[in-house]
Length: 78
Image 1: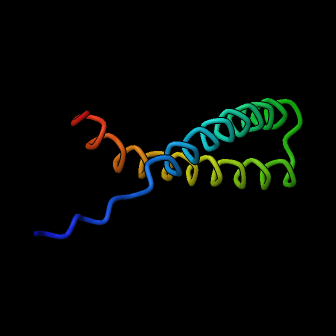
Image 2: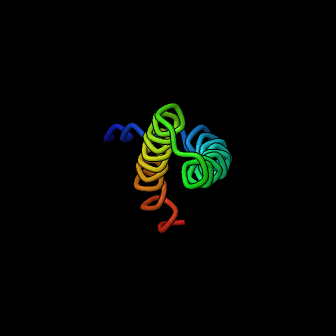
């Protein structure tokens, strides 16, 4: 009898994805406000914060993509 392959914890991944989706929405809103602030009152502090939030956005999007790449092949077999 062959051993079952190590499968990811689908519940944990799905929960993490939901949490990341909420975080993504918050980050997008913050980023949009920072962009508007930069357009009205450009300064170094806001520019630094804008870059930091953009970096967080990228990281969250990358993690969501990784989770989707793990979940979608299994969802297609349901």
